[in-house]
Length: 131
Image (cartoon, rainbow, N blue to C red; front, side, top):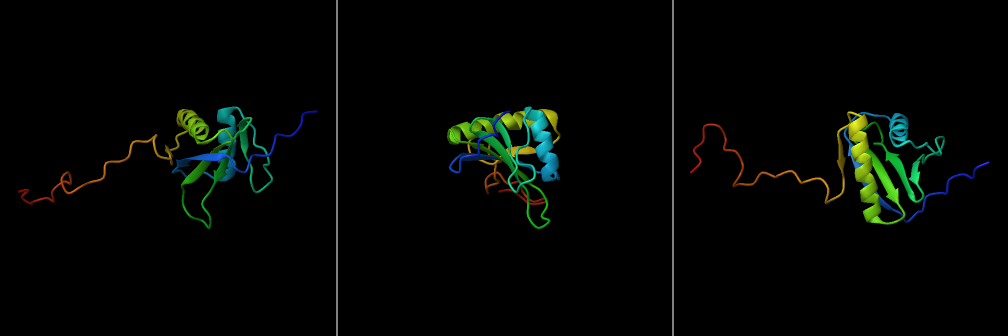
């Protein structure tokens, strides 16, 4: 008889991926578990999770009160922020291969920032002279 997985550490670092797709929490957990070869633990509780390895697990946050997506995929790592980000990037790459979800990292340093228009590079309004 195997022992149940350890409860997650409360002080673990978190790296969040955001999927801007309409997916319910149960379906997202099942898809992620299948994609990672993991199992959903605590499926009947308020905090189901998918353990990836000792000290690393995934939880899903969904919008409240009927708000539209995004779906937040939190990757927790007791080894610190660098481990959480590394695991999140690996998960993002797996999910991009096996789903059609639009997934981006919601932490600095991975996704290049979108170029914000400035007064120097903004397109001129049609019919205006750009002197």
